[in-house]
Length: 237
Image (cartoon, rainbow, N blue to C red; front, side, top):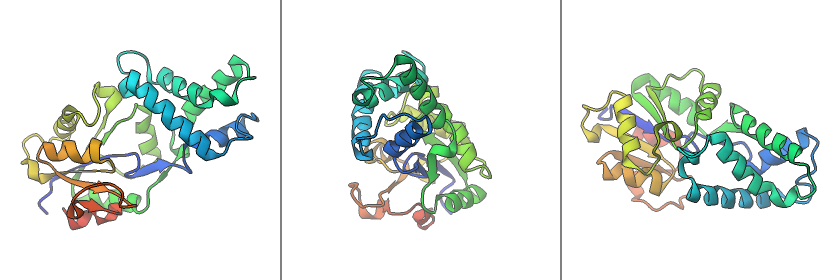
């Protein structure tokens, strides 16, 4: 086995939001007996969320690092997402929804493990050093503990804790250092992720081996460096 260290992306690589963001929003509103999304299907909520996320990331990248706490950043995203549905709602009620949503995404309850990921990650960690590298805030640590409780990662590198995020090469170097891989030849380190821009390109720019996870085959990459399921990683180690 030539590979000595694997850097592993998280969202949409080993876990995903359960049923999608829109479903989580609707479920929480129902739990709180709110009628926010009575006339809005999940795709409308998903679309508004993506737009709000993009807007706030452009203004305050990396979940507001250096400008505001992640909780405030996410509250801004949520407020923009639900704005058309809360025109006749009190500020207190809207704030309660935002706070509750933030808490819901603080545990594994809002997520599910990707197909084959649980067994694959477990096997990887038994035979090789595996470090997590994610554009996220500190809540992801609790999520990973909930969903991969039997797995011991060599390191968990979280962008909002470090001050820079993928595709910045510095966070890859930080992950390598944290996983005691600084002395390893670059071709003995592999990065796996689902984003061509944030994962594959910076990893290959650093001369790391890289695999692009593309279940639907839509991501552009050399065929030999693309996998459709995380369990295919063993063919490339």
